[in-house]
Image (cartoon, rainbow, N blue to C red; front, side, top):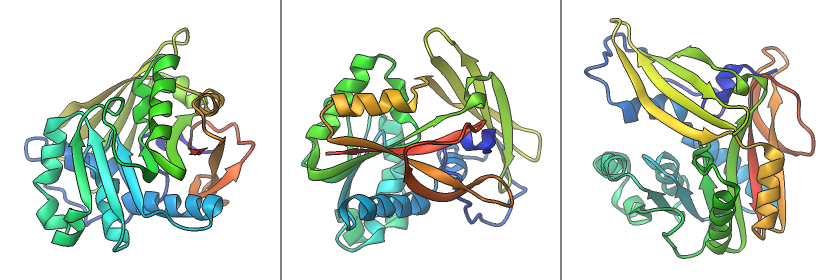
Length: 286
């Protein structure tokens, strides 16, 4: 069984952290940096993308688009992964894209920056040149609450893929995902709080918050808030097929025998375990 920690917007792959910083405070902290430290694992996610591509196409991809990219952590890591890799990041937020751009010189060399394009725009209305893989991670597409909206988005993704392209997205669920509850995770110099604040069983709507707490007792409440619909794996697969994908498959995470937690190893699966909390990848195969 996985725990509620697995329901937080992150993979369950263990990450190497920096040395603990007990001097972090709410006033001196940057919420986007905290988000990247607590939620994202771009190196692990790209390893998973490569694994999926080798399974499905027998090779790795070179071009990708990260939808709802935020700070474009995966896109930045993608252009660092291989010299020929190109990435496009699309997001509606001027502020978060500016945050990313301000740090590029410290994180990417000139050649890598030339292979990264950041676009401020709506993923439903921002056509790009065809790419081999499109990503929608951290459950970002859950903001589309109507079936027709998800279908429109999936169709636009299919149109944006190369002929043998793959659409890779994630989803979460499990019995704990329907509960109004919080769980803390202690990280390096701060505590990450995943707050499942509201769940409506009739509409499937959820409201989730991320809070941060610090050793000095200060807090950043509602650093991020998500108004989502909790979509299920069968619904997502059916929508992918309806959108014109040739196939839609699920990658399920293995379980560590000692801890009974996710082990970060993802394989294609037709059945899953009734965990309290799980994260899965889905692949729309064009």
